[in-house]
Image (cartoon, rainbow, N blue to C red; front, side, top):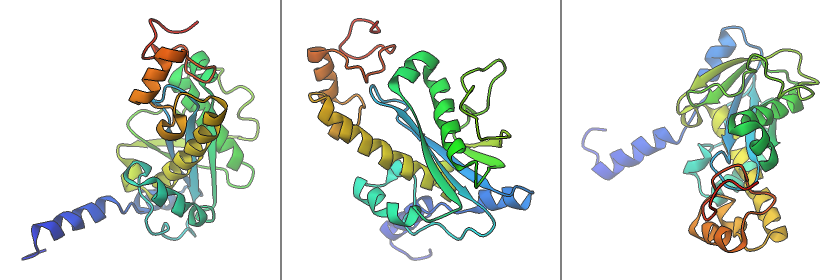
Length: 242
């Protein structure tokens, strides 16, 4: 942008970052996949509540993502919510899977992510089975590990495991992953607001279960609730709760 003010160049660079597209998905479709799904998680680092995994499925007929779709972390709460009507009809299918705080404690965070991811896949498997999953990050936490019995009974409708492709910053590059992150973030935020009414004092309506100063102070004063990840070394507690 020759001769443009520096502020305009910065805005232009930001707009490129905030505009994920279907380039990676189309590459997989051209290679033979019938359906490709973007997948992303929210709640991994929270102290309370579930971990949630969003999934958005696309195929060769899917058009560009709705305007404004981006990694959920880069959007305001209002912007994320405003995208929900358009995202509810974009792509072939979409789902959000959950794994509870108790499952995080019993299975570990990676096992809980796997459960939530397969629950999302199971929702879409009847009418939109997925061939390839694009997973944000560098670690494949979705694929079933050897001798892994966590998914027994979860894959009831899923006949085959998809190919998993990990991609760093996929939530900023791939429209399906960005859309999945928005759906998962909105659903988990709404859930934590609802749970806050039943467990007052921790400020979940504002902090969504993450370790804010208010949340940590409440843990010191009240101790952990049944919805806290009690196997973790929670701030304000001497050791993991039993």
